[in-house]
Image (cartoon, rainbow, N blue to C red; front, side, top):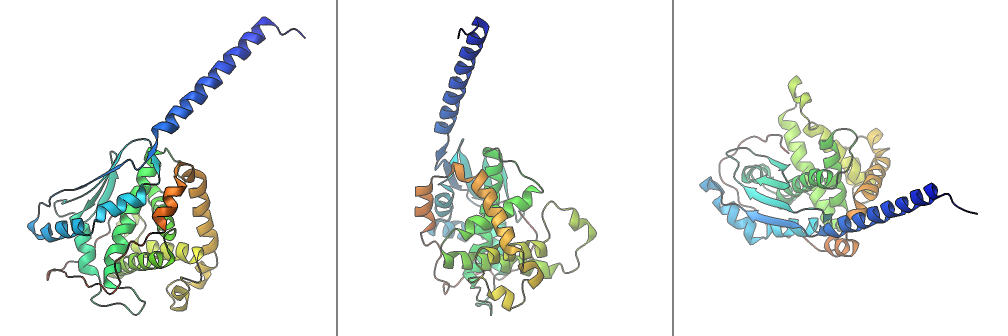
Length: 297
């Protein structure tokens, strides 16, 4: 059968467009690379943070964060820094950079328990847990931005889920300790504002108590055996716990569909199987001064 000239030309043009699109997609994929992360410890402005600045470098804090983030293929470079923030205890992602304030780390340090809690949260975990969670939360914002990932609902809630999901992919003991330390920080903060002012509900973040329960739920949903003690001790209401497996699966499905295609799996497996945390018996040394916790991230 003879194909009309106009149809033939249209088919040829379509083939060219498909070929060009395929080539462009290949170039875009090639441009995205794993490990496109740079780090920097910025010298603190406050002399009181000098020891922390030195200690973070000694334990290779940012190098470890970089390694955890490195399996994701990013289209452009992401910078992760620690620096003084003029008294603001916070962390944020903006303009392809994650900033973690020395003031925020210092606050977690001061609010850590003096001894291991009855729930098994070691002082060192109460520091590392929330700081790691904060870094992964801001990494979630970076992924949404750089990978152009659509988000239903509040982005802050989605970033919390990304942080929890990544943490739960680590070794079982590492995940249990990090989740426990983060939950301790949320619980301590929630108790400090037992009667929140109406205006606090306008914050783009959930209240500490809400984030506490959300974190426990996704952890319990991922592994009811490892996190079963949070039900036994009454920290997570049973009626909420009934749906936690579904909540975890929802977060896992979103990660698999939207972020997994950008992950180097061989590198991710290597990274997630490593041991990251110091011994839970390791003591921490805090300065004598103290101040109440403040919501951040």
